Image 1 (cartoon, rainbow, N blue to C red):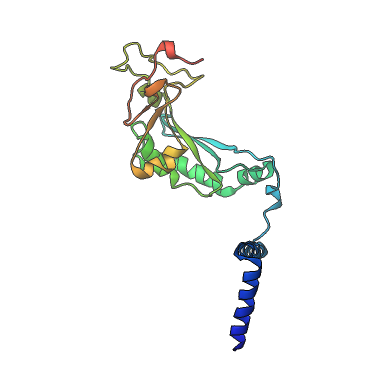
Image 2: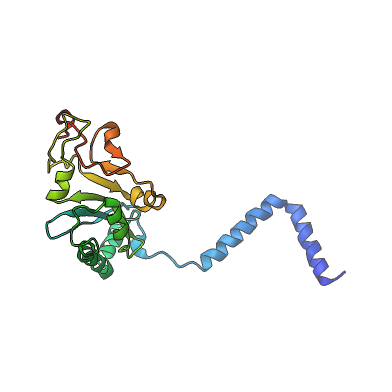
Length: 218
């Protein structure tokens, strides 16, 4: 019997004695131990049970007339206070925000008034510079943009035709899932802030009011 055969028989005898379940548990433990040896320890500033998802920036990206979009940036996952401060201090973030504000009006021909919110979102995603921060949601902003979503609704004779700056009810917006997932499949869902029932969303850019005075939130 060769040395290899002897070793194989020894292994087989041990396997038969302790059972395959025990061997599997031991094997998993060994693999975990080996992986731990080659894995870097987490940064100490991430050591805390007190973590939360934080707003990084509310960024107005507007043209010379003040029309455009308000981009809400947030941490992509819950972070400690120390990690949040570190993220805020990254020069690459400020640089990306400034570039987006500068480049967007130029890219869309000098005016963002007629720019579709999904076209803007696709452009804004190109300025994501770290996996730690993502776009949480986008709202339209500016006098011209707001006027679009307070126009009379042909299907809503008693529709409210103004945007309350305190609540922003009726403004068009999209959320994180729309920006990073729906857009990939060309399934655009347009949302209208705090509007009731089925009028809260549409599959096209409906540029008119979506709620009545009786449905106003305060």
